[in-house]
Image (cartoon, rainbow, N blue to C red; front, top):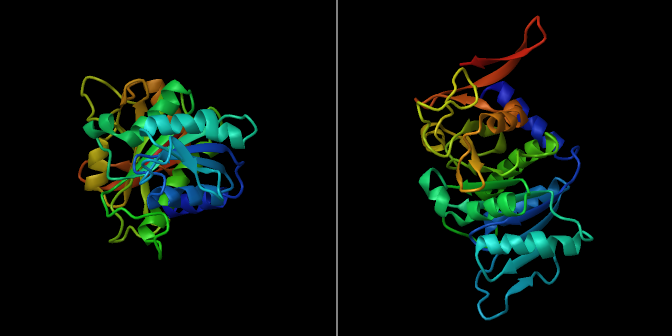
Length: 304
């Protein structure tokens, strides 16, 4: 693995304990007791953040509209859809615990199953993030992982893939937080897909991050310039063709479509560029460093 990427990830882990804590509302599509969601929740809380989970109920039929863990009021369920569940977290559960204050950031997932390309429009995990970004005007990140057997929160021992996925999702979240407010442009969400665990992708430091698109690039439309091109790669190709690659796509929260606003793309790029790597359609990738020219301007160099 390129040393510069490993170093960037190590820096992220160190920043977990040095960046300021924020109020985060968390949702998902798989139920409040799903293990991936709880592992991500644990990673965020270990970073010092104040997280309130508000997700659909699982096996709670006949018990009422909402409920919570008896010993942890930050863990809540809602007998409804993912978007409705996160709405409760934004408007009620979070403010109840935060002295009337609203969430500063919303996260959803990681979903058990990928959300790549056209399935994004039907995704409940993405739907929760889009509700937060579009309706509540809260910057939002949606995370998804490959299909795997679902496991409840109290599975022991905890599968390492769940811990790693939680840590990788927390690393991306932390980088957004570290970039400062506003965390994302208005009406924008990030659709983030994690690659298959194992076979060399076994630890947080094994993963690389690629800025991508929800749909294939249109030759008549330019994206933000990055990695010597003005067309971002398709997220499906990033995850399936390149080992250990996490796709980070910029979405329009008004309709779950790809974000085609180049200015907003550049804002996200600038927030994440320290951890991003270049991707090529043959599945290869390389790191990107910044070179300051004599005129004082920074220019990207692709180390392929």
